Structure formats: structure tokens, C-alpha cells
Image (cartoon, rainbow, N blue to C red; front, side, top):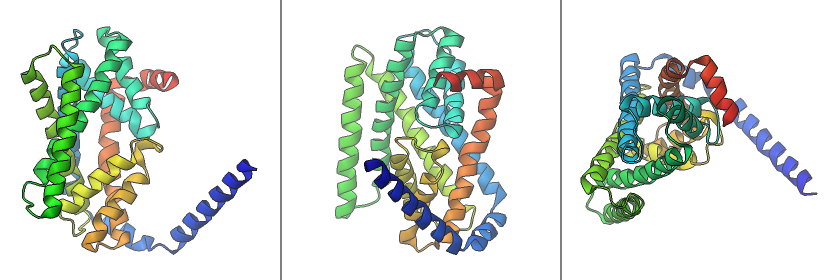
Length: 283
């Protein structure tokens, strides 16, 4: 009986989505994409690649005390993981990171897995600092609430990280945190410039909101590259600014291309077709 209810709900959802798609002003969306600023899109793509490089830098500092690993290996593993995650679901990207650490520098799987978990905690701490910087210019009630939330998130995550990495130098953890905060700031710039390229009336606040919504909605990685989740996040993020849905969807599609295409290209160069199939088979 439960199976029938699931099918019924799924059919209703698909029917609603098709009805919405048939009445959506796709012509306006394609017009916005056709007139997009190619220079801004290229700038956003570069910011995204730099963001991944910074993320890899923070991860390397976390991993280095436990294993002899080269900088180029952690960089390659980060880009390859992002590429695999753009075309697959669930934890495929993490499997690619583990695979490259093991095959290229002989890092034990247990050590690599612990470092990836610690890097996730580091990203949460970096997010807290990012939110703190975002709220720095706001002095109202909502601004102070954001400051308090950022301090709680960043401080708590950093405390957990220091406990996980106990015995390690604090300055190394702070440097790793600096890399991670830079990665968040560059991600923000990526979102802002990619959305602005479609001539949407985007503000720094709305692009930051789209970034946060996209990351929150993509935690479970239910779709390759967060397809659908990303566009919904952009639509919701731009709604308070009064941006029409058609242009917001165009901005989301442009952002998707910026986040996926260059990274997949770099990932294919790093992995190669044979190694890419091997990673996906083991994930």
C-alpha cells in the first residue's frame, strides 16, 4: 500500500512540474542566456577554479602531519573530486579524492578518510568566518543575530577541529582556516559574477543567499552537480530583489555552466578516461 502512495505522490509531483514547465516563459530565459556577458562568465569561472585551489590548500595543511603527501597531489585530488561530483551523485567525489591520494602518494585509506572528515569541519569553520565578514557592515538586530550565529558556527567547528587535530600547531590550523575562508569568498564572487553576467539585478546579499541555499540544499548530493537545486537556490536568492523567475533561472543555468564545465575539463585532464571509469566503479 505504501508503494502505491509513493507512486501517486511521484506522479503528482511530475505532473505539477510538467505543468509549470509548459507555462514557464522559457523564451525570456533563453534571451537572457544569449545576451550574457561572456567576460564576466570567464571571470566567474576563474574565481571558481581559484576557490578549489584554496580548498585544496586547506586540506593539504590538515593532511600533511599524518602523511607524506605532495601539494600537487592534494590539488589534483580536489579538482578530480569536484569533477566527478559534477557528473555523479552521493559520495563519488570523495571516492575520487581517496583514490588519487592512495594511487599517487600511497596515503592509507583510513588516514585519507579522516583528513576529508576534518576538512569538512574546517569548511564549517570557514563558513562561520565568512558569515561574520558578511554581517560586518550590518548593525541592526538581524545583523547581530547573524554575527552570533557565525561566531557560534565558526568557533564550535574550529574547537572540534582543534580537538581532532590535538597536538598540532595552532598557527597551522589558522592558516588552513584562512585558505578555507578564501575559498568561500571566491565562491561568493563566482556566484555574484555569474549571476550578474545575465544582467540580473543582483546584490552582494542576494548572491550570498543563493550560495548558502545552494550549499544547504546540496548536502545530500541527490543530483549530479546539484542540477535543479542550484537553479532553485538562485531563484529564491534573487526573489527578494524582485528579479523575474525567467531571468533568475537563466542566471542559475549560467552559474551551473561556470561551476561544472571548466572543472570537468580539468578533471578529465587529471584523471583520464580510464581512471575516471575506475573511480566511478568503486564509488
